[in-house]
Each structure stands twice: as C-alpha cells, then as structure tokens.
Length: 231
Ligand code: FES
Image (cartoon, rainbow, N blue to C red; front, side, top):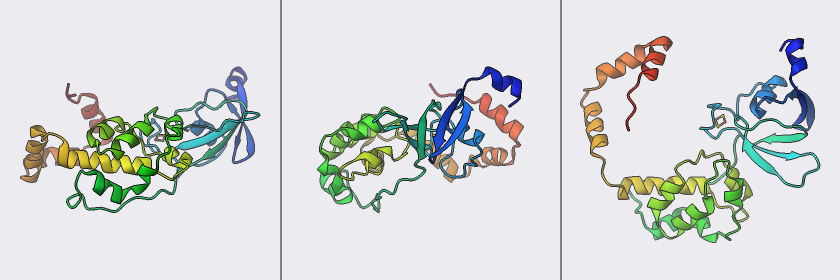
C-alpha cells in the first residue's frame, strides 16, 4: 500500500498469536493476517463465507467475552486477540448408509452423545451462520431427520459448535448423518435428478463434460456468467 493511501486509512492494532500488528481497519481478519505477512495454507478455502475453513476465536482487550467469526467475513477491529481454528478434532461415526435406517435407535448407536444435550444453547450462540443448532440436535434426538436436515442445511462444518459443547456432542457430523438419512430414505424421489443420473451413466452428457474439462478460464467464466439458473 502506498504511503499516501495508508495515511488516509485508519490503522488498528490486532494481535495474531499474541504478537501485535498494525493493520488497516478496512481489512477482514484473513486479509489482515496476510497484510501482517502470514501465508495462509490451512484455515483458508473459499474466502467467501461458504467453506467453513477459517473459524476464528477472538477476544477484545479488556472484554471477558470470547467471540467467534469466520476470518474471511469478519472485519479486524482495534484490540482483537485472534486465534485460528482451522481444524477441530471431532469424532466422526463410520457407517454404511445402505445398512442403517432412519430410526432413533440407529442414530443413537452412531451418535450417542447427541442424547446427552444439556440444553445450554452454547452451540447456537457460537454458530457464525446463526443456525439454531440446539434445535436441530433436538430434532435428531426424536428422529425428525427432515426438520434436522432442513435446519442444518446452511452448516459450513467449521467446528465452532463442537468447540463449546460441554458434553462433547459433534453437532455438524451428527447433522450430516441426519441429512444423509433424510435424503437416502425419506425425501420424495426427484425425477429430474434420476433422469440426469441416467443420462450421465449412459454417456449422453460426455460431449458437454469434455467441453467443460477442455475449456480455458475465459470460456469457463463466460459459461458461468451466462448459465441457466433454475427457478
Ligand atoms: S475461507 Fe471459506 S468460509 Fe472463510
């Protein structure tokens, strides 16, 4: 950044892994880290609030509250002490979708900790997507996989809910299992999807797929910008 431009932009002090950096206040946490010289290889993905790779916890100097956010979506602020959570060690049940059933009994064998929920609502409060996490946990407990799938649909799998749960529920993996059970066994069959799958299997889409695979960046951009969007 040129000196003249830097003069017009307010600078703020943020702390990355305990070290102080002076960065423009207009930057997101992610951009501020790169401005400070960090090369992000983990904890970054889409840069657009979709992939959940950039979960961050922070505390403002003098504030007791631990806050959370996505580094690519949250603006850096004066006095922020930051720590990245690119990965949170959480249990993931191993199952064969063809061998389990959409029942509470099957679900309880995969994710028993879901039934230990204390109702503290920490998971909902911490979710950067504002998902009512505790409510979908309640739906999973009663085997209402349709509602659990619907309510958890916007989950980015960032792991922040798991990081705050006092009884070690793995919310996002549990919800993923719920969505899989719903779509495999309960959702009404989708004739459009079935037809598309058949066409791909029988090679009817090969020419179109080859065109995409061989297209250069410009062509891909043009196709993307002029794509047909279903209503
Ligand atoms: S980098 Fe993908 S959500 Fe932030």
